[in-house]
Amino acid sequence: MAVIIDGKEVAGRLRRELRDRVKALRDAGTVPCLAVILAGDNGASLSYVAAKEKALEEAGMDGRDFRLPEETTQAELLSLIAALNADPQVHGILVQLPLPSPIDAGPVIAAIDPAKDVDGFHPVSVGNLVLGRPGFLPCTPHGVLVLLREYGVPVSGAHAVVLGRSGIVGKPLANLLSRRDQNATVTLCHTGTRNMADICRQADILIAAVGKPGMIRGDMIKEGAAVIDVGVNRVPESGTKKGYRIRGDVDFETAAEKAGFITPVPGGVGPMTIAMLLENVVQAAETAGGIR
Ligand code: NAP
Image (tube, rainbow, N blue to C red; front, side, top):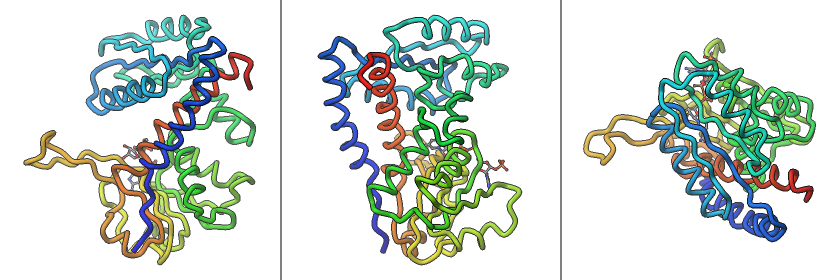
């Protein structure tokens, strides 16, 4: 039976450790502050934003909340971002995705000052990541690396298979894992991949970020592999309070029989995303305050 990677525990520890850095900043007169912009009323986005705001408060940081209507225009968003860029009391800016159509997220993200890009989605942050230069790392991929490190999963020389090539998870993860400091050999799979099950069975580290509940079953996993499930999928279920339950991309029961390490959903990668976001905000505030 696999070792269960407890992301909730690791994230809790990281968040407690961050409190000392927040205290040092506050003592020096700087309260780390994240501006969160949410346009529209996407159900999942509302709950992500609420969780981020609660985490900021618990960490002793400031959150500035901008809830905008579904009809918000791109020009309005750009002018809000320009104001937040110019505000020295705001250290990080987060635009919750997806944005309502027809807003094009690309120019909106690109308008954020890269020094405040705590989500790590700005083209400058992406370029730094690919080039191996210092910069903000995107929170979910960074959280995955920290989980592998915390559980002593060997990454250097391992064959890491990443399923999904989104700009926020799959692609940055594949890039990070293939950097010299991680040193994995990476295969990146997507809907154009042939024989995906065979490729999965070759993985020492298998990371699923496809958004398909239970797609990865035990028979696709190599004995002893580390299985990281990024998926967060709402599966309708009658009799539950919300009418759905959250399920990952991995079929946990069958996968846990084969894997050496496995993340649960919920309680695996999800809590790490928020912890890494808080760390990026603290880092941004430290840089702005000349502490680092
Ligand atoms: P996304 O933008 O929805 O893209 C999904 C990716 O998976 C695409 O690259 C797609 O390939 C690939 N894919 C879909 N079905 C596939 C199949 N049958 N075979 C092979 N590849 C397939 O992905 P995302 O935004 O990264 O989200 C992925 C999952 O992670 C979702 O469940 C999301 O909710 C979750 N997520 C969790 C966190 C967290 O904090 N835990 C953060 C972000 C996302 P193509 O490119 O060919 O279409």
